[in-house]
Amino acid sequence: MSKFGLVVLGAHIGIHIKSEVQEILPEKILLVEPVPHNVKAIKKNLINLDGVIIEQVALSNKNESKNFYFVKEDSIHKLKKHWSSGIGSFNKQHILDHKSKRFKIEEEDIEEVSINTLRFKDIVEKYQIKQINKLLIDVEGSEYEILNDIDFNSLEIKKILFEYKHFDGYKKTGQKLEKILEKLNINGYKSTKDRK
Image (cartoon, rainbow, N blue to C red):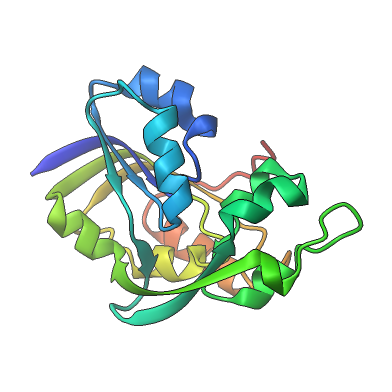
């Protein structure tokens, strides 16, 4: 069984985690990212970092074929927001809900693909993961499904950081977040909010 120093679900293009990846190596690192052009960017941005595994897949709480939506590569420059490449979701409306005066996303900026999803436990089994020092999750509203599906009795995760602002819908938190915080508390975690 394997120990991983870092597992990132929603690795985006790898830039925001590059220094952390460099600090953690030579421990094993797994980056999970479903958006094809982001995976290309990760490979470019984290070049020469041996020991980093990149898994191009979307995670859910079921193994199934689902529609997945993300900002088209050609639209990122037009939208003038580098972070727009990080918005991918099973819910197209979640992406459109980001529209604002300064972020003028339209339906034509969104690509739709049919994707086979995996459960978190499938990734754990594939890489025979027994321990994770740090788990980072930023998956645009699917955090609840993934965290709720983790079996903490079969896997030791020392530290979990996750985006919580879309737990109960676009920029909404509520019962789903409370349920996950309770599950984490029952499993020995202490929760704090970090606005980084």
